[in-house]
Structures are given as structure tokens and as C-alpha cells.
Amino acid sequence: MPLAKMDSFLKYANFFYSAVGIEPYTKMSRSSVASRWISLVFWANLINLSLNLLGELGLVLIAFATGEHILEAITVMSYIGFVSVGIIKMMFVWQKKPALSHIIWELEKVFPCDKAAQLAYNLDKYLNSCLRISFTFSMLYSVLIWTYNLFDIMQYCVYDLWLEMREVPLLLPYPIYVPWHWQGHWSYYLLVISQNIAGYTSAAGHVSTDLLLCAITTLIVMHFDYLARTIEKQVLSGDWSKDSRVLFDVVQYHERLLLLSDQLNEVFGVPLLMNLLISSFVICFVGFQMTVGVPIDLLIKLFLFLISSLCEAYLICHHGQLIADASFGISAAAYNQNWYYADVRYRRSLILIIARSQSPVYLKATVFMKITRGTMTDLLQLSYKFFALLRTMYAV
Image (tube, rainbow, N blue to C red):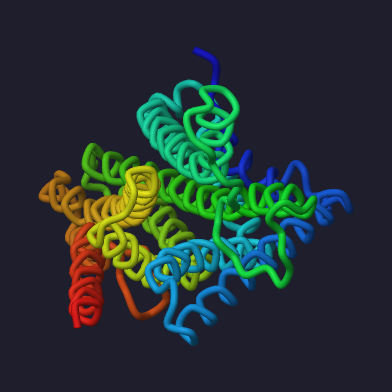
């Protein structure tokens, strides 16, 4: 088996970032400034996405002002939430590039580079898990966004042009307010192209940031697990001068991982908070739309949207639980060590390690929320409360 590289953990995230014109970090071996072409692609995608977001906001405002097409407006509000989170994620990663680069550099320094070290770290297990999750999540979002982008066009091609069963009007993939009559006008094709690019940009903003977060979290979890195994299997001599050097290396390694975890939260804290909060509203709006009676074609698209939003939230919560469990495992490993053969000074020092490890590392959505699998339950409860409120208001 060839040696694995750290880039293998990050390749799916980097693919989607490059598609929207973002270089999220620089490597120590490749400390370069983003090219003008990359910057041009990023700003062009961001401007196009923002214009479509303004069109969706305009449609919602007009719908509530006139009292017409309220159900369509609620659907569009789901799209607004989706696009807003995509923009927030892209902008924060673009802004936090120096801090993110520093995290990658630190992970490169401790990444196992030879075969024996990679076997000791069980690197293949973590890499395979990361790649499997990344591929599945990427495919899910790709199916979602291209279903939305091409659904109406495919209906027109199949039912109208090919089978000639019924006349299918040319519609935009996402309803927006356009201040001119675009039906039957050449501008329709420009709007379709713009919305297809905007939809993909928004999806790539979601996928790339989530996959980057999960890849970095997986690497940190791998180091926590390796440190725990090292502590637990350490054979102590009882000689304080020898054992204290082992203890010093353990503490230094542990502090390095804790610092990396804090830096990770500084970079992703705000995007995580906005993602989880807005996801609760998106799940609420999509669930409401599915329960008020919609055509089967729209129901299929809404179902894909709902599944994707739930999977995205669970992916974040799952990795939050992994890093919490791995960091807490240091305390159990220290207790299971053969410390009863050690010098009394070593045992006193080991108590401090256990005490520190019993305050686990969490993924944090700023200071407001510690993310674990329990956060998923809280998110669903919040979504259901808004859903029940919306249903009650609609029934009245």
C-alpha cells in the first residue's frame, strides 16, 4: 500500500472550493497567493449568487405584501436560508484563510509520514471513513442541486418535445422576482444559466465547508485516539527521571491538540452557529410545504431538500460527538495505565492530566452551543416548534 498523504483527507473539500474560486488555505510547501483567475471566479460567483438571493427576497416581500402566493413564498424562504448559509460559509472561510492555513500547517507537522507511523496511528481506518463520508455527502448534494436545476427543463424536453403528451411551460429553477417580462424572452436563457450557476455555487459553499470541517476534525480525532493508546500502553520503569520525560511528551502533545481544537472553533464557530440555526428554519419550512398538499414533482424535490438538510446537520453533530469522545478518552487511558508502578510524583502529575481530559473538547458554534449528537435532537425540537406554529397560523 502506498503512503497516504494529508491531502487525501481534504481532496473532496478542495474540489468543491476550487469550483467556486476559493483557495481555503496554503500549505507550508506551497505558500502562494491566490491567482487573479481564482479571485475573479470567486467574486463572479458571489455576485451572481447575491443577485439571485435579492430576487428571492423580492418575491417573498411582494407575496406577503399582497397576500398572494404565500405557499410559494414559504418555499422560497427555504431557498433563501440555503443560499444565505452558503454565502456565510464561503465568506468566513475566505476571510479566515490565514488562521485556517495555520491549522493545516500544524496538522502537517504532526501528520505520520512513514509506513510504521501510519500503521501505529491506524491512519487507513480514519482515511477510509473520511473519504466514504465525503463521497456520500458530495453525491447527495450533487443529486439535490442538479435535480432542482434541471427538473423543469427535463420535464419540458420529455413531456413536451419528446412524448408530446402535454405542454410544459418554461419555468425558472428557482422562483424569483424579475422586474421585466421574461417568459418567451431571450433573457429567460440567461436567467436559467445564472440560476444553475448560483444553485451549484450555493451547494458547493455548503459541501466544501462541511467536508473541510469534518476532515480536520477526523485528523484531530485520529491524534487524540493515538495519544490515548500511547498513554495506556506505556510501560513505566518507576524511575522518575525517565518517566517524567515520557510525561512531558504526552502533555506537550495533548496541549498541541487542545490548541488546534480551539483554533478550529475560532474559524468555524460563526458558520456553525448560522448553519444550525438557519437549518432549523429550513427544515420547518420544507416540512410545512410537504404537508399542505403539493404536486408530486415538487414533493420529490422538497423531500430531497429535507433529507439533505437533515444529513448536513447530523454530519456536523456526529463529528462534534467524535471529537468530544476522543478527547475525553485521554482520561480513561491515563487511568488504565500501569501508574501503580510509577513514582509518586508521576502519579500526582497524572491526576492533572486526567482532570484536564475530563473537560472534553467540543465543536462550538461560538460560545452559545456545544455540538454533539444531542444537538441534533435540539435542532429537530426547535424545527418542530416552528412547524407547529406555522401550521396553526396557516389553519387559522
